[in-house]
Length: 255
Image (cartoon, rainbow, N blue to C red):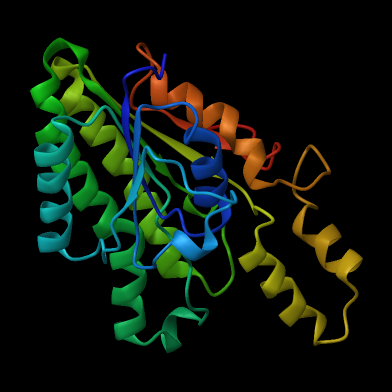
């Protein structure tokens, strides 16, 4: 189902995005990645594939996003799939102490970038005619649960969930499917560093991990590779749109 498909994957420099990069590189005809960092030296395979191109850009800036999609249109002629993994909680403060410049940064990284990517993906995918396209955003269980000190992050991800529904409604007539994946705590290298910081308070790693997964129905750790299957489903579906899949091991049992 991915044959002859052109895929744009954003936020591929680590964690979930890097796992998806490694998986999809052998599945699609052309794979374009974009985020602020260069990727060549951190590519997961010994040799980068010949069908891959990385375009480092700050995707919170509209001119950068517009130029990214114009480049894809000029060089590849179309875009079939957008998978957006851009996002980070970045800062932790109570609401009354949250600096507004940090608030603005969290909203920009997690919501503004997603809005811009959706906006320009729709413009380009409309050119595919009845073939349409697929847009997949990574949300977070923080859109529905409470993460202490992370109010702007939860707010941004809740906004992203609503963006997915609005975009799906507007794009339906053009066969553009827009969906989301909402994972709980994913054990990536970045999250492992967070755990190491928690351990400095004297807690053992096992205690911290047990607390992290305590609200899950399935008492196990969630890794980036565990999200590949559902990502491929939503990247290729012809009948699902406007949905957010709670991939959170039962942390959220209803929507």
